[in-house]
Length: 96
Ligand SMILES: [Zn+2]
Image (cartoon, rainbow, N blue to C red; front, side, top):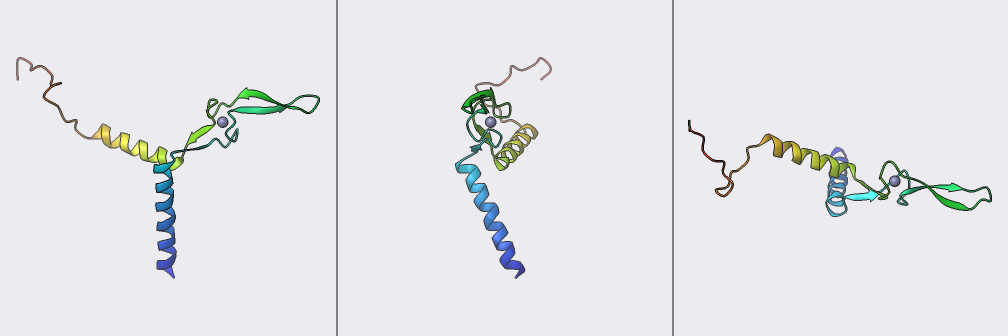
């Protein structure tokens, strides 16, 4: 029973990782992809309101899993040594 639930959990995590890899952007939850707030006039008609502050009028947001992946990659890249290429090697200092 425990292994079946564990396998289901692994499947869900793998599916979410695949979703983040295939489609990294999701719809903005605040404006539901419109990019603007909707407001009603006195007559009841729906008009475009202020721009959405969360997605800055894009209507898209980066998924949480993708954001975690990118921050991990950035941390790994900043923490590892850079490989120097022969073309962009720094000039040698006099004491070297
Ligand atoms: Zn938005």
